[in-house]
Amino acid sequence: MTRTVIEGCAIAAMDAAGTEYADGHLVIEGDRLLAVGPGPAPEDLVRDTRRIAGAGRLATPGLVNCHHHLYQWATRGLAQEATLFEWLVALYPVWAHVDDETEWAAARAGLAALALSGCSTSTDHHYVFPETAGDLLAVEVAAATSVGVRFHPCRGSMDLGHSDGGLPPDEIVEDRDAVLAACEAAIDRFHDPSPGAMVRVALAPCSPFSVTRGLMSDAADLARRRGVRLHTHLAETLDEEAFCREQFGVRPVEYLDDLGWLGDDVWLAHCVHLNDAEVARFGQTGTGVAHCPGSNARLGAGLAPVAALTAVGAPVGLGVDGAASNEAGELAAEVRQALLVARLRGGPDALSARAALALGTIEGARCLGRADELGSLEPGKLADVALWRIDGLAHAGIADPVAALVLGPPRPVDTLLVGGRPVVTGAELCTASEQEIATDIARASARLAGKAEAAR
Ligand SMILES: [Zn+2]
Figure 1 (spheres, helix red, strand yellow):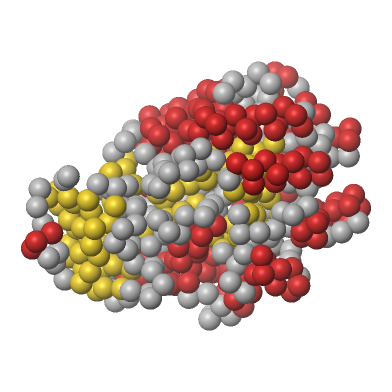
Figure 2 (cartoon, rainbow, N blue to C red; figure 1 turned 30 degrees about the horizontal axis):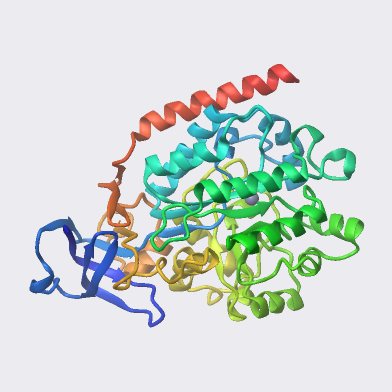
């Protein structure tokens, strides 16, 4: 089997011991890391070798994106000053026209942006399935395969339409039985439970204000019966909190807790508005959080209590969220953003550069239940590696490479390997044409806007 050797780079392994090398090596065999250590690679490990330049670079684990809505890449820049609920009400009628063609262009654009920002594993939470749309989940799985990133599509759903007291228009909600059948089919078609899997499925009813209590409960039963994870949006805004009090008589976290939706097989997007008891409950149950600082800022939703959540041991990963509420879908930028907003809330020691990088790597892997094979650079783990240049104008002169990466300005990753396979080299995609993807998404966005306009 061909080996790949990277030497002369700084390494932040992000393992439990906090291992770092100022000058180290990585040896990759197949899709796994064979060796990680200081200095040059040991002679006896170097054979049939492909070499990747390491000098002037920092190696980290590939980043893990825990929350996204890829289709939203086709509706960027709309409802610019809206709250979440206003923004949703403005965008639902546009999303009602999403189809295979939109999905392909948007998923490729979103995944390309992620790969160029060092992200090797991404989730997607897709919850809009118009009747005539086509086979959207299959299309996004194909898009991820074409870009070359590891992918965890979440089969989302909405079954609480406006006429039943929900927020979305009746036209874009589904019937509960149809949702459950589609979830089961998504697991059968795409979920790969085996080690090193490139695709794993989770079930993800959308939110308390767009899903019935019955579907929340049935989705949890189905996920546990089939051994897949659960995901949804929670406690994103005070409007949602008011909705839960009015509809269910409880706060959002109590609502989920009653439904059996807290646990170490669950990760939840946002979790901005939590009280101390709720934070403690996340720690007790091992419930994960996808922190989305860019989107929360864009919508003015508030700031999640990240330091408190990590202090109680809850896994906290990062998400770029959909590109309609965060027009920048680059994950490395969210690592920096997470650090900056944490310090606005808690002062300069609220989140260190290394703790911020942990959110984007090993903590994200914990959220997805894959910390045994992703999220750190250790022998035996998957060879998902990001190599960042730290010798250019943006970073040169900062002696601490992790500070250079996290505190310095985000730049495209120099090299991204996913399972040892190059996806980005020389800060350019090698699996697809960035310009072609940009041209396609511009066309798809205009076409979608035209369809929505014609239907008004
Ligand atoms: Zn979201």
